[in-house]
Image (cartoon, rainbow, N blue to C red):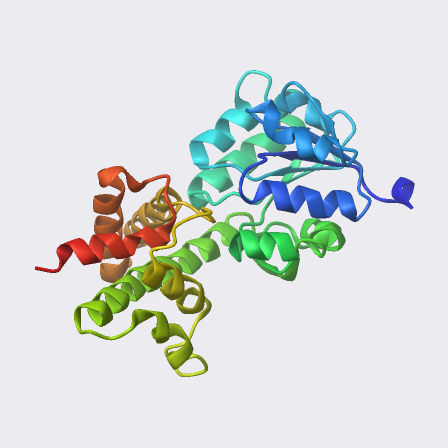
Length: 296
């Protein structure tokens, strides 16, 4: 069975990359790995993956090369830097980028990669966090040629419950920006709610179950409110720095498009304030501490 499956390569074994690659290995795909910190590959090597020394080597045997990296600058370095993917890429291969990047930069990099090597690009950012990555229930929003998205659909079916092609390259990133605007603003409002309930003498741990099924219910409410009420901030499932980066991308995109994002702009300011207090690497559930501190 394994011989009939396309060979995959993956760069970025972090909070999301680890469970995603584990699912691909479990599904039987041949998988080659690269990570800036090689030790993070160890649990996957035990499952049959192979590790290479630089990103260019990911292209040696792979039909599809996948990225799940921190930001635009890191993706640019991995693709175009010394020993980068551009040095090993060839026509017929696909790059699938799960990272959350600036849409304009994604379009520029995709065009350059194809012009220099013939390798095409699908931006496929995801939503659902580490629980979704572990369960294979991510929502995947893709940008790219229709035939390229359809080509990787069977592979991505092992990672997500839904894959939606949003348009040409870059459209997936625009959709992810919209997703993160909703998530980040929601997280801050939930922190306000928990802090207000506590200040008012209400058991904040009851907020999520009390509102379940109502118009205010949401996945962020059910996940974050209990964590915030219990001040349970570990294990870290995602990072404040990630939400801040995505909010900054939203504000920049809105400015480029002549659109207005007052709520997301304020959320970015509050997220930056929280991050400046040593919380960039902490879970966004810690936002409740910011709101608690703001109370007189």
